[in-house]
Length: 350
Image (cartoon, rainbow, N blue to C red; front, side):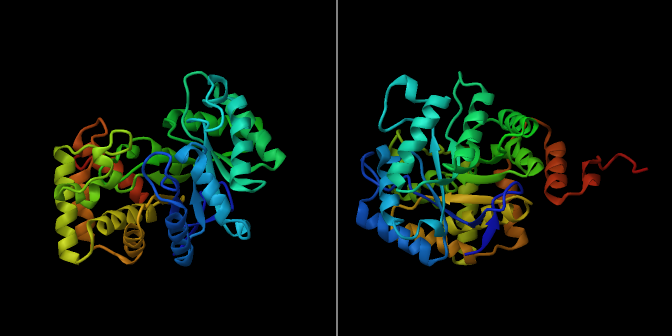
């Protein structure tokens, strides 16, 4: 596995995959027990993985506790990221949930206990709420950095305008910087290209991508009657639409051409997109079985042809609210760093 800097605002180095631990535990009536979780963890580490992603609310706190038990002698060899703000497994009252400073402090202390560590490398605000001012969040994160409880603060699932506002306000006030953003992104869900990804590129923020296979949709397994997230409304999954049907068709066709799985085709496209960025773009993988983990790891050796990448790009191109011509030119100029591509073909170049 290769390694990358965690954006341009830190010197932190992370593996090119993050192991998501949302399946570590059985409190949600899904996931894996301690034995299977340990096997997944060991295989990820054996493949060179060093970046581990968890959250206070995952499996009602079981995920953090399991992870802590696995890191009793090796904690400093890993980068641990955790989140607060979307459910506190120890305190369900209103005052200890959400993004407030009170909820932040209560949650980080509980996460440190469950993880069996005295610091968290990257601490994310899991979701924004409608009440907490951004300066309260920023000052709270800065205090945690100064106290040594976290190394870096970051924002998950925030809209681009709030992330940009937070990043600049932290800079202007001399507080610890916002260093990253988590967002959903895959061949089936590319709306982050509208503002989130360009904003992260401009500000040097690391990008962690959740649901890189759209809850299993991009594996094509649901077309064979497979069960999983699609049959459980409580879990994240992107519903199939006409465009997503065409996208999955293309993924399956290219898989047949190359002799690799649909999941590996989808992850290869995602990794190629990340390679075009000057900041870290790290998918968070969340396998429930060893076969799923091996599929993810196998994708690290898959390279598609330029034509195959272009086919996947074309079929999954999102509607960003502008004409297809302007959207295409804007996207190409952004990806290639060539401002002349913004010029309309019919406009003479001076």
